[in-house]
Amino acid sequence: MTTIQNSDLVIAAGTYDGVLAGWEFRHEEETDKTKKQNINKTKNKQKKLSLSFATAVHEGSVRSLCMGGGVNETEPGPLLSCGYDESLKTHDWHKRMTSSGEIRTPSDFGTPLCSAFAPPTCRSTHCIIGFSNGKVCIYKKRDWSVQHVLAGHEGGVGALAVHPTGKMALSGGVTDGKLKLWDLTKGRLAFVNKTDPVSTRGGKAKYDPINSLVWSKDGDFYAVTHGVHITVRQVATGRALLDVDMPSRVNQVAFMEGPEGLFVAAACNDGSLPVLAVEDSEEESRRAIMAIEPVDSHLAREERFKCISCVRDYYVVTANSAGVVSLMNLQGAVNMIMSDSEDENENKNVDENAEDSDENDGSDDDSEDTELAVDIIESVQLGTGARITCLTAWCKPNDDQLKENASEETQESRVKPGQMKKEEDELAMNKKTLKRKLDGKSDVAMDAETVKKARSLVEKAKKLKSKREKKKKNKVTN
Image 1 (cartoon, rainbow, N blue to C red):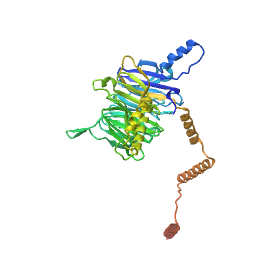
Image 2: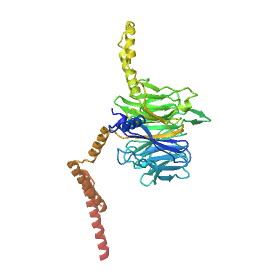
Image 3: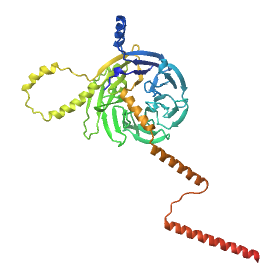
Image 4: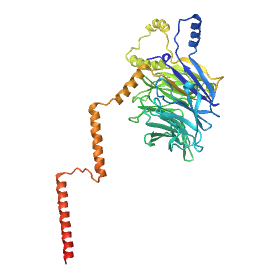
């Protein structure tokens, strides 16, 4: 597994005051030119996340941030910010956030609450925005014109997530409790699912807002959160592989995927960071670990996690209410989950009479290095504690991913000679069929009996026609 230190990483965060800030994480190797340069390099190396910009972009809070896929996979794409002032602003990362454009949203759509590019990772062509009036608007990224408006939800759109292929999108309602799947190629609704109501008053059900939606990297799974509930479903079967309640409200979730399997990390309102394994198992119990323990209720206001985003493997970026942005490695938490399951299997075959060996083993246990569930690589604070409302991150793919993506593109573009000839023959047949249709002719497949009936009918019609012509001639001669 490659380390994040060998990759370029960019992070953007929006605040309640309308400020947009960005950090860059770059690995710099030491050079042996002069002693002074080595000292400077060491200082720079200690602070891995450096603030690139921090500027006010909206009048009011920044409600959503999303980063699209660029033409080149080795560089971050465009950044879009949605503000409470009912405006959308595009930014160019290479110009250090010099605003490259502003779009005013329709006046009757309300505040843009969530956003996502389609496709989300590479060569994005469209952008989807969810508004407070429930509309889902599809913009063309080329000129930022409105291509289509979907009906959306009743009471606002709380979350959006675009499938890795860019052909589907999930949206969650704020008050109607509905999870909708949209077919972006046809611009219509494909599926609707409803969450369980929290309470019922006066015959009307009340639902928790769906505040987080995320697809897995391969698009085979999706996760949805509402209130304290986390659900992970498999797309092919619709089966819930994970369906649990957390001790406090879940603000956002992120998928993590590696050799050990698929996991979900959750940013909770009590300052905790649980990691849960996603498994296709019929057992009611699920493997999980609390990577960061919850904070006391009177202190959780500053320490609660607001946002979380996975950048690669088990590396995540988090932001809390105190304005602290952290880059973490949750490999230790995953190892603990896997080791616990292995220990349970081993304990089934161990005898209970092992009290004499406990004292001798104590010294060995103390000498071993204990593995931490969380490795906090770097943490930075925005200002004196700005309230962060949203976060997005981009990480440069490793060499293996770039090679894999390049091979997939070459396979798709490569066409065999036999297949090309077959496609040309089909195209020629289609042209002939179209010409027949234009000439008023059509190809009809008939069996022998049908052909005989058709011929007999034609002969009868000819006889009737000849008889009528003879009658006409007789009348004229008379």
